[in-house]
Image 1 (cartoon, rainbow, N blue to C red):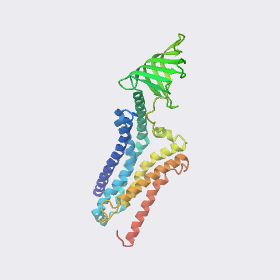
Image 2 (cartoon, rainbow, N blue to C red):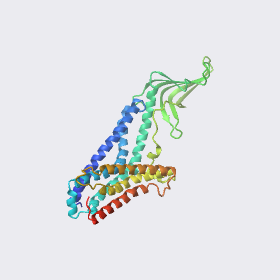
Image 3 (tube, rainbow, N blue to C red):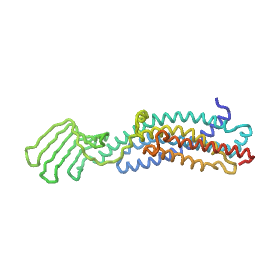
Image 4 (spheres, helix red, strand yellow):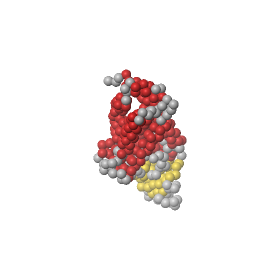
Length: 365
């Protein structure tokens, strides 16, 4: 299927691609690790979930990094061949842009198909898992913030809360005591609740926090008087503002592609186009990488690497900007993000034609 030249070319490109992918992923993961460690130090999330969150986040990073890394790896790999004059010899043997593009585009198509599956199916599911894990971790952190074995005052002192201890999994509080005062007066009417256990529940619709007490009693009346009421309950939910220790990840990233396709919301359309634009970028950036890698021996291996990195960064910024414009309705959805992937294609055509013109004039770089 692949000739000797094709295998040799792919070996150079894949080596550079893997190296760039590893470096960029480590940089992004390290930065995220610092954020998670800071959140754990502030009590926002338990330290035990940090590496699970990093593993889930790495999937999204790979989807984002792969198009950039493959294009940059191509520039580095082919740049070495130009630096060592190997491409000059190959050109003298009849190797032109078409023969160079053939194995690269075959690799690009395979990578784009796999990346499309990750971007459209795997990444949203992983983002949903990450979101649920963050919510669970936030709930555990909230319970730990309240603490066990001490009294906590909430709502400007009108709510007094006490839990004897936390369960082994840190998801429940045991032997709970809660007092609600209707006013600041000492003899004001109030409520007292006792329960064997309690846990925090977040209403996904309203975003309100609820403390759910399990298997307990509710006492309502005025201190010092005997005419109080007692009610036994299996579960009793109380809306209570626990200390918030984290933010919920934007839900749109966790929606399946099928759900987004059924929506007419510009923001949902922008999200779908973003997921599709990433695998398309594999091909468009790969096309641009070939003319960018041409360097003379005097320029060295990294002769055009800086230019390539700059162009790729501009491309990603334009793609993100176009997504925001579509979500805000500034760009019609039928135009959407698709004008951005066309830019590398047009630039590739310009560069290849300029090289042919130089050759016809008898000039050599």
